[in-house]
Image 1 (cartoon, rainbow, N blue to C red):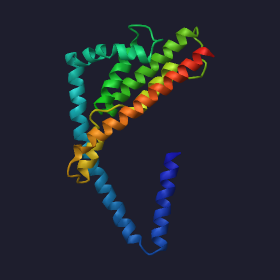
Image 2: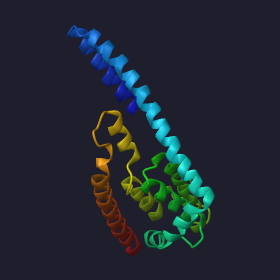
Image 3: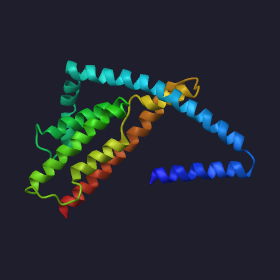
Image 4: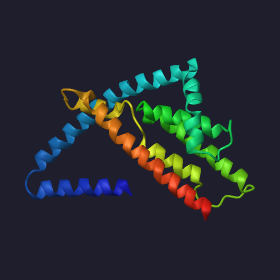
Length: 200
Protein backbone atom coordinates (compact mmCIF):
# COMPACT_ATOMS: atom_id res chain seq x y z
CA UNK A 1 0.00 0.00 0.00
CA UNK A 2 2.80 2.40 0.90
CA UNK A 3 4.50 1.68 -2.43
CA UNK A 4 1.38 2.84 -4.27
CA UNK A 5 1.12 5.91 -2.04
CA UNK A 6 4.75 6.96 -2.69
CA UNK A 7 4.42 6.26 -6.42
CA UNK A 8 1.24 8.37 -6.55
CA UNK A 9 2.89 11.27 -4.68
CA UNK A 10 5.94 11.21 -6.98
CA UNK A 11 3.76 11.07 -10.08
CA UNK A 12 1.68 14.04 -8.89
CA UNK A 13 4.89 16.02 -8.22
CA UNK A 14 6.31 15.29 -11.68
CA UNK A 15 3.02 16.11 -13.44
CA UNK A 16 2.63 19.32 -11.45
CA UNK A 17 6.22 20.33 -12.28
CA UNK A 18 5.61 19.66 -15.99
CA UNK A 19 2.32 21.61 -16.02
CA UNK A 20 3.80 24.63 -14.22
CA UNK A 21 6.95 24.66 -16.37
CA UNK A 22 9.25 23.60 -13.52
CA UNK A 23 10.24 20.19 -14.90
CA UNK A 24 13.93 21.18 -14.76
CA UNK A 25 13.62 21.93 -11.04
CA UNK A 26 11.92 18.54 -10.58
CA UNK A 27 14.78 16.79 -12.41
CA UNK A 28 17.39 18.62 -10.33
CA UNK A 29 15.49 17.77 -7.16
CA UNK A 30 15.39 14.08 -8.09
CA UNK A 31 19.14 13.99 -8.78
CA UNK A 32 20.02 15.92 -5.62
CA UNK A 33 17.78 13.68 -3.51
CA UNK A 34 19.38 10.56 -4.99
CA UNK A 35 22.86 11.81 -4.11
CA UNK A 36 21.70 12.80 -0.63
CA UNK A 37 20.08 9.40 -0.07
CA UNK A 38 23.29 7.55 -0.97
CA UNK A 39 25.36 9.85 1.26
CA UNK A 40 22.98 9.31 4.18
CA UNK A 41 23.00 5.53 3.63
CA UNK A 42 26.81 5.45 3.68
CA UNK A 43 26.93 7.46 6.90
CA UNK A 44 24.26 5.27 8.50
CA UNK A 45 26.08 2.13 7.34
CA UNK A 46 29.15 3.14 9.31
CA UNK A 47 27.15 3.94 12.43
CA UNK A 48 25.13 0.74 12.15
CA UNK A 49 28.30 -1.32 11.68
CA UNK A 50 29.93 0.26 14.74
CA UNK A 51 26.99 -0.19 17.11
CA UNK A 52 26.09 -3.65 15.81
CA UNK A 53 29.73 -4.63 16.34
CA UNK A 54 29.61 -3.31 19.91
CA UNK A 55 26.40 -5.30 20.49
CA UNK A 56 28.05 -8.43 19.07
CA UNK A 57 31.08 -7.94 21.35
CA UNK A 58 28.68 -7.53 24.27
CA UNK A 59 26.99 -10.80 23.38
CA UNK A 60 30.27 -12.71 23.01
CA UNK A 61 31.70 -11.28 26.25
CA UNK A 62 28.60 -12.15 28.26
CA UNK A 63 27.63 -8.55 28.99
CA UNK A 64 24.28 -8.93 27.23
CA UNK A 65 23.50 -12.09 29.23
CA UNK A 66 24.46 -10.31 32.46
CA UNK A 67 22.24 -7.36 31.56
CA UNK A 68 19.42 -9.74 30.63
CA UNK A 69 19.65 -11.37 34.07
CA UNK A 70 19.43 -7.97 35.72
CA UNK A 71 16.33 -7.27 33.65
CA UNK A 72 14.64 -10.49 34.80
CA UNK A 73 12.61 -8.83 37.64
CA UNK A 74 11.30 -6.24 35.16
CA UNK A 75 10.48 -8.92 32.56
CA UNK A 76 8.77 -11.00 35.27
CA UNK A 77 6.64 -7.96 36.14
CA UNK A 78 5.79 -7.21 32.51
CA UNK A 79 5.19 -10.85 31.51
CA UNK A 80 4.10 -12.73 34.65
CA UNK A 81 2.58 -15.63 32.68
CA UNK A 82 5.79 -16.59 30.87
CA UNK A 83 7.48 -19.49 32.69
CA UNK A 84 10.94 -18.98 34.17
CA UNK A 85 13.85 -19.88 31.87
CA UNK A 86 11.59 -19.80 28.82
CA UNK A 87 13.51 -18.75 25.65
CA UNK A 88 11.07 -15.89 25.09
CA UNK A 89 12.43 -14.08 28.16
CA UNK A 90 15.98 -14.10 26.79
CA UNK A 91 14.87 -12.80 23.40
CA UNK A 92 12.70 -10.11 25.00
CA UNK A 93 15.62 -8.99 27.20
CA UNK A 94 17.99 -8.79 24.21
CA UNK A 95 15.41 -6.81 22.24
CA UNK A 96 14.88 -4.37 25.12
CA UNK A 97 18.63 -3.83 25.59
CA UNK A 98 19.15 -3.17 21.88
CA UNK A 99 16.23 -0.73 21.78
CA UNK A 100 17.48 1.02 24.91
CA UNK A 101 20.80 1.62 23.16
CA UNK A 102 19.00 2.89 20.06
CA UNK A 103 19.97 -0.15 17.98
CA UNK A 104 16.63 -0.79 16.30
CA UNK A 105 18.24 -2.86 13.52
CA UNK A 106 19.90 -5.10 16.13
CA UNK A 107 16.66 -5.33 18.12
CA UNK A 108 14.62 -6.64 15.18
CA UNK A 109 16.04 -10.22 15.02
CA UNK A 110 15.61 -10.64 18.78
CA UNK A 111 12.08 -9.24 18.51
CA UNK A 112 11.15 -11.73 15.79
CA UNK A 113 12.57 -14.61 17.84
CA UNK A 114 10.64 -13.39 20.88
CA UNK A 115 7.40 -13.39 18.90
CA UNK A 116 8.13 -16.92 17.62
CA UNK A 117 8.75 -18.12 21.18
CA UNK A 118 5.56 -16.44 22.42
CA UNK A 119 3.63 -18.08 19.58
CA UNK A 120 5.03 -21.48 20.57
CA UNK A 121 4.10 -20.81 24.19
CA UNK A 122 0.55 -19.94 23.11
CA UNK A 123 0.38 -23.19 21.10
CA UNK A 124 1.52 -25.19 24.15
CA UNK A 125 -1.16 -23.59 26.33
CA UNK A 126 -3.92 -24.25 23.81
CA UNK A 127 -2.89 -27.85 23.11
CA UNK A 128 -1.37 -27.16 19.72
CA UNK A 129 -4.28 -25.11 18.41
CA UNK A 130 -3.86 -21.46 17.45
CA UNK A 131 -6.77 -19.12 18.14
CA UNK A 132 -5.60 -16.59 15.54
CA UNK A 133 -5.63 -13.92 18.25
CA UNK A 134 -2.46 -12.41 19.68
CA UNK A 135 -1.88 -13.32 23.32
CA UNK A 136 -1.58 -10.73 26.09
CA UNK A 137 2.18 -11.31 26.15
CA UNK A 138 2.47 -10.70 22.40
CA UNK A 139 0.48 -7.46 22.64
CA UNK A 140 2.46 -6.24 25.64
CA UNK A 141 5.76 -7.00 23.94
CA UNK A 142 4.68 -5.23 20.76
CA UNK A 143 3.58 -2.10 22.64
CA UNK A 144 6.84 -1.95 24.64
CA UNK A 145 8.87 -2.56 21.48
CA UNK A 146 7.07 0.25 19.62
CA UNK A 147 7.35 2.73 22.50
CA UNK A 148 11.07 1.86 22.59
CA UNK A 149 12.63 3.49 25.64
CA UNK A 150 15.95 4.86 24.31
CA UNK A 151 19.03 6.14 26.07
CA UNK A 152 20.91 6.86 22.83
CA UNK A 153 18.74 7.62 19.76
CA UNK A 154 21.49 6.66 17.31
CA UNK A 155 19.39 7.08 14.16
CA UNK A 156 18.20 10.56 15.07
CA UNK A 157 21.71 11.69 16.02
CA UNK A 158 22.98 10.43 12.66
CA UNK A 159 20.22 12.23 10.75
CA UNK A 160 20.85 15.48 12.61
CA UNK A 161 24.57 15.19 11.93
CA UNK A 162 23.95 14.54 8.23
CA UNK A 163 21.79 17.64 7.89
CA UNK A 164 24.26 19.98 9.58
CA UNK A 165 23.01 20.20 13.17
CA UNK A 166 25.37 22.18 15.41
CA UNK A 167 24.76 19.76 18.28
CA UNK A 168 23.38 16.43 16.96
CA UNK A 169 23.37 14.84 20.43
CA UNK A 170 21.09 17.56 21.87
CA UNK A 171 18.19 15.22 21.08
CA UNK A 172 19.28 12.70 23.74
CA UNK A 173 17.52 14.19 26.79
CA UNK A 174 14.24 15.10 25.01
CA UNK A 175 14.17 11.65 23.37
CA UNK A 176 14.77 9.94 26.72
CA UNK A 177 11.93 11.91 28.33
CA UNK A 178 9.55 11.27 25.42
CA UNK A 179 10.29 7.54 25.18
CA UNK A 180 10.07 7.13 28.97
CA UNK A 181 6.60 8.69 28.98
CA UNK A 182 5.47 6.61 25.98
CA UNK A 183 6.83 3.39 27.52
CA UNK A 184 5.24 4.01 30.93
CA UNK A 185 1.92 4.87 29.25
CA UNK A 186 2.15 1.69 27.17
CA UNK A 187 2.89 -0.49 30.20
CA UNK A 188 0.00 1.01 32.20
CA UNK A 189 -2.37 0.48 29.26
CA UNK A 190 -1.25 -3.14 28.80
CA UNK A 191 -1.59 -3.92 32.51
CA UNK A 192 -5.12 -2.52 32.56
CA UNK A 193 -6.14 -4.47 29.43
CA UNK A 194 -4.51 -7.71 30.65
CA UNK A 195 -6.27 -7.45 34.00
CA UNK A 196 -9.57 -6.80 32.24
CA UNK A 197 -9.07 -9.84 30.00
CA UNK A 198 -8.22 -11.97 33.05
CA UNK A 199 -11.43 -11.01 34.84
CA UNK A 200 -13.50 -11.61 31.73
